[in-house]
Image (cartoon, rainbow, N blue to C red):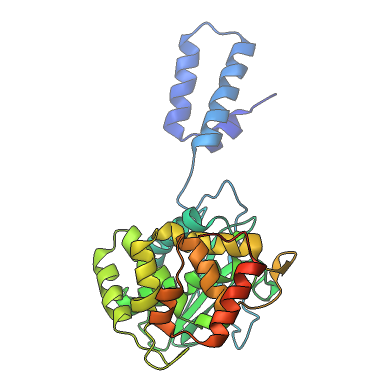
Length: 328
């Protein structure tokens, strides 16, 4: 193997290169020894050098990305990437905004540590819009609509959006990450529970757990207070999902591990065609699977939270027969 001085100069700074040459001259080394030394140094610097945007384990993401979903048609510009995260801004986002880089890296790292990997690439692609596309949506590596990437796409109508890293902005981006867990964890696609808990109920406990485990105490406290006071009209009037269902399960029956186990049990037991779930859970199955995740019969907790009908009872009995591997 032959390594030229030009290659070495590209890997070492000028000072390091001159120092190396000086040291070599001071020693009585033959040609083969010098080449061997060059090769060793070259390999060391090749493996150790890393800039803020280097991503050795995955391919470099494109510098631009043309949107082609829903009403979105922006040409996005990449502003940051690492092994876990790629961030894109549209032309109206303030380019000095940098908080997504650190915050979403931590959120995505934590999410993968708890719920596992999400596809071969495994990175989160975060898209930000200013003064357009108010709200947000997710996509995941199963879906070609967003080029088979794990995506959160968020926008605000305010022309100063994302500048101050407000609580609302933090909640929006974290919410969308939670949907990727819901729709793409454990190598399975779709959410059999979406028709039961809707757009935001899973996110209430997911976000609380993320804030708490990342040490964001004020955010965890703020989110806890908000969710404890939240009242919904499904499956019945005055339902409090967080207060009477998710938080008691989380606090008393395993915390984060229970959240993850629910998705593990779904992936292992619920009907699917390859990677795609083939149908939705009914209420009896929902309680049965969560009971398995918590390791305790949650029928009484479900009665407190949602009420308990004859239909639910019949579904619950059948679920225990249909899914005997779910035990508690």
